[in-house]
Image 1 (cartoon, helix red, strand yellow):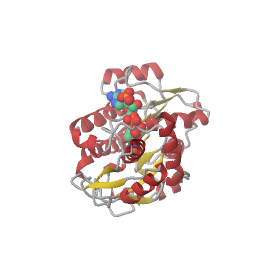
Image 2 (cartoon, helix red, strand yellow; image 1 turned 135 degrees about the horizontal axis):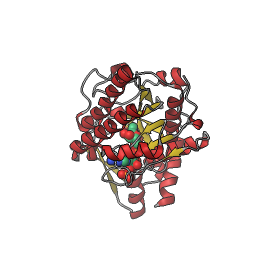
Image 3 (cartoon, helix red, strand yellow; image 1 turned 60 degrees about the horizontal axis):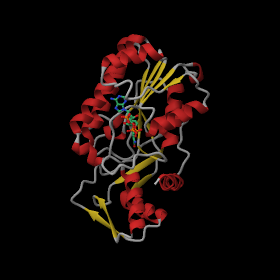
Image 4 (cartoon, protein in one colour; image 1 turned 90 degrees about the vertical axis):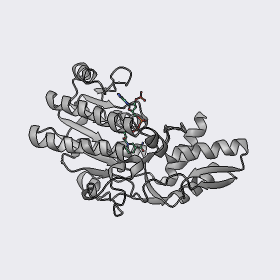
Length: 312
Ligand SMILES: NC(=O)c1ccc[n+]([C@@H]2O[C@H](COP(=O)([O-])OP(=O)(O)OC[C@H]3O[C@@H](n4cnc5c(N)ncnc54)[C@H](OP(=O)(O)O)[C@@H]3O)[C@@H](O)[C@H]2O)c1
């Protein structure tokens, strides 16, 4: 059954965040005018009463649940308890309220961090439960994965149409450049630009560079979420990715070149690499709702670096 989003009252949680802003732009382009973006300040989703108020105020028919505590390896290592509790609790409150209010569609944004540490590449959705996630981001990944089970059991028992989408690492304009919580691409862009400006002879990068990652441009991800909300109604999780794997070493080389940084790169091998390899099998998203990423890593990086330079 296809959901015609332009006719629905839609709530986007986390709509002020990096992915949330791209999603709201995509929904506006689809003609969705009944779109509400409750802020963290007005509706703390950790509080079940605030969630109840959100339902009373907006009477949503479709919810995109993006609100989360997210961060790079360092932030996950510093605050694993908070990452576990808050990501789980927000989902518990919202999914339970969605059941009680009988909404049409609930889309939970998951994460590639839910996959086992040594998943065969490319990661297939069927491998999600075949092992424990990489330790540095396991609490975050497992909290999200528990919400997949909640949605599956609520579908079975109550008929709630909840879907679970797993995006790979995102990048693009408007990312978080705060060095205490940023992900690898914005962290590297900032490091290179600042080092270039100050004439620093070297930058230090975490790990060995041997780990690999896959990156999805944030506006492509938004398009995938919209298509999933419109066309995907299966209890099975679905990956969203670009299908392009790159080593961190190659990524650093690329960002150094694109930012024009002239100094040396020093690898701090006392720091963790994180998951050894990450790359998704994206065939389910293509077969189910025709999603393919449109923006190459190179094009997306050029836009992102321009965006950073324009604001800093
Ligand atoms: N970024 C990635 O690479 C990536 C990859 C895969 C999946 N994801 C998923 O995509 C989603 C969005 O990530 P993002 O990178 O856009 O994160 P983000 O920029 O940090 O945005 C998170 C949003 O959640 C809100 N929020 C946090 N705690 C809240 C609470 N207790 N109540 C209400 N709102 C709360 C934040 O509001 P405030 O800022 O006002 O606190 C913010 O709007 C997350 O579910 C994340 O797990 C992200």
